[in-house]
Length: 387
Ligand SMILES: *[C@@H]1O[C@H](CO)[C@@H](O)[C@H](O)[C@H]1NC(C)=O
Ligand SMILES: *[C@@H]1O[C@H](CO)[C@@H](O)[C@H](O)[C@H]1NC(C)=O
Ligand SMILES: *[C@@H]1O[C@H](CO)[C@@H](O)[C@H](O)[C@H]1NC(C)=O
Picture (tube, rainbow, N blue to C red):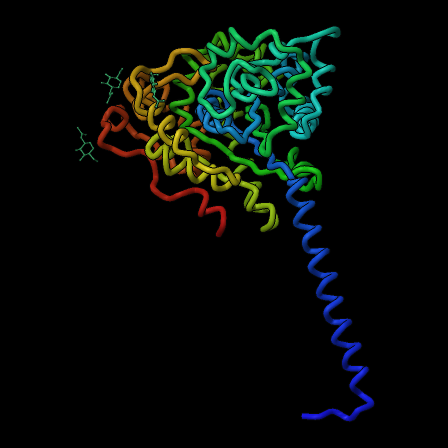
């Protein structure tokens, strides 16, 4: 079709403008994806748990990943500076500390460590972080290998404190494990903080198994337990203390879980509930879920390693170490080693939490000892949160 002669130049102009606009669009698009590639926002993961709940194990699952800078319990330094305080009084200091650490600002530790030159070994459980055992923190091990804690402790302890910050900045993921949060409210500002990309993994465990494990590590947990008990500590009889501590812990687990239900939908997606028992029953599948949730690849060498550490022999003695062990057996050990009286007493103080998280109560010693009775409900807690 022929157009009237007068409109031809106009049409030509329009088509030139359209090409130019397309050109601009492509350029700006390229620039955007270019800058997105150069400056990807790090992923910040908080493994929120309690003592003796398998959080060292979950921490190691993240810590050994070559894309992860991991620290366990950085807020230990806060608590050990204020041993006569309570978890709630220390909440804000703990929160501000983990925010700084997520952003790789390690000057925050100045408030809790002696002045003067420090080594990376000043940091609590530093050798549990593979990132602090490999470049740029320490050149003794390659970055993509499973590094045994004991070897790292010997070979990398002399590195200056400054390498921690340098190492942190070289990773796409910062993962912190903390047992020192007793509600979710204190974390709301971090969930909404535009400089963070915070995802929470809430790791829970059957309180009966926790009690048994705590009994075997009472000495190591003494200072922490005293802080948890707060002012009640001196008024409680020694034999009542473990149950009071468990009551506080169960209550806080319950509150955290309930608080998630009232979060806006966008923030709900920043929360994943993980039961330790589900993890030990199917370590590969549950680890895959946690990795997917946090945007990590489940590399073949990590899959082999996970199978190895969950199917190894032995029960694991030390409070803070994750050695090869039969994790499934450990998770059931309370059923033959705790007297029914203790189980019954604990169930009274943790009943609501256990019911909500899907841990069936036992009503007799016979039920407790009968291992063909499965005490774990089969629903998956994370899908319940969605509804
Ligand atoms: C499995 O664990 C054993 C004992 O800790 C170790 O000697 C072996 O190298 C491990 N294998 C893998 C694939 O990690
Ligand atoms: C679990 O541990 C107990 C106590 O150490 C032991 O008697 C039992 O044989 C173990 N079971 C398995 C399947 O390893
Ligand atoms: C153990 O539990 C199973 C499954 O509920 C039941 O069939 C069995 O009778 C119980 N055994 C004893 C000795 O109570």
